[in-house]
Amino acid sequence: MSDVIEIRGLRCSVIVGVLSEERSRPQPVSFDIDLHRPFESAAMNDDLEGTTNYAGIISLTASLASEGHFLLLETLAHRVAREILSYDEEISLVTVAVKKLRPPVPEDVDTVGVRCSLARS
Image (cartoon, rainbow, N blue to C red; front, top):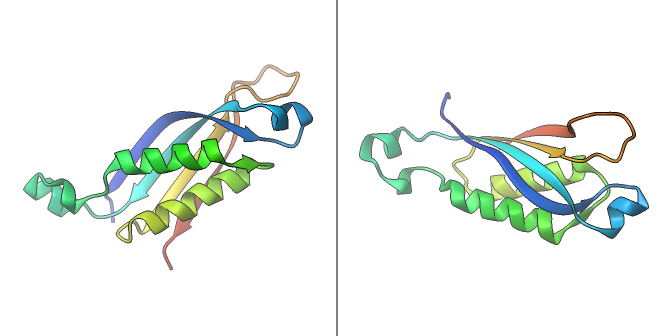
């Protein structure tokens, strides 16, 4: 299948990390999400019912990020990916990338992050 819905640069504030400074206040993260699902019917009929509404995925991701407390980015990425697969049965594969926009390291680095892909069994 080659149909993919892309969400890029969704910014959220989340408590994530193992350092005490990361546990005490939310920090900015960015999500990139790929949803693999057929949407030819939606395209041919110009009908939202034949695809996944990305607004719902954005809202779901933002809620999970803001309401949770995570030690690892890996946990956050997997939790979002699992919830997205549960959100719409037509999604066969989801890839979630999450990046810390201000990682707590002394070196000059733009971001650090993880990416996971989960497929429907």
